[in-house]
Image (spheres, rainbow, N blue to C red):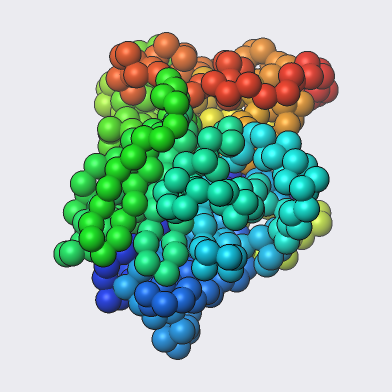
Length: 466
């Protein structure tokens, strides 16, 4: 069984006004690879037409041949890394999507998930639209094509007015690049400057790689238009209460990124400190589940006054697929990624820090692995509240019936993962650590309170763990 994690479906990057636009977009996507490992693509503009290269696979594999960049000319480009949450995992669904229509050519890259996409698609098909993909993103292009507005930014604003859900968008035409973020600001998006050029990216770590200057975050509900004449900002949509995704801090974003006004690493470390205040235990060492658990484990260890050790070592060189033995190696999916260090764990009372428990199967295997390496006690601490509800705003999470905390108490989960004790960071502690104050976050995966209404959820059935 593979080690399961919730999956972010994509990351976007765009640059306008630089002679090496496609090459820099490749580097930007490389920095955003953690946001999607399924497929990627780049569309460039030479001022007269758009050029496309996209395929299934990792960034380094899809763009491994330098000759590809000779076919991506121009001083503007947008790119996308993808993990599908809406639409099949096939080449036709790889982004950016580029189309030709009566007003020229346009390409779009999308991070997020539209909760009303099917309703809008049904309406468009009733009026004669023919869809080529199974992605919600294509709905946006059909809305643009059917708009009677003249200016591109007006057509985009009209299209966005029909959408509900999470979206960070990059549009590219022959002469301009447009960035847009939904009014709730679910997903991160930032603006940077490189020489005379402008850069837009899902996370600031992509700006760091190409040595671009971080200017600011794109505001919720903002539409930014970039042309040879400069940059303009518009707020065409009705203002809504912001609801940035708290799970970006918990797990998804790279720790060196700056999102929602804060550095991810420092926030995760504060999660660990708060977790130690809420759930201290007599122990000898603190170890993280690498890599996302490392900052929280450091914070926990410092607050609790315990030694921090790397008791689990991660293999960073795993390909996309591997041949899994049927019976010969127990817990193969976890063991191929993590290996315990017996010399650190043997005879110790160990606190294991992880960012979340989803189905519980991975945590169960990790606890048994640590115990089999000689640990005397294994205490699991989670640097987020129980994940009890699925996400509809751009994260691939299991259905509610597959989320262990939706139908089991903490004590039942502790027994299932075979830990000596189990403690989750409280929702109040999470918000305190992130310094939310008056700034709200989307916490629907913990609370079930969805900022944008969605079809009523069925009650979670009781799962038989034992």
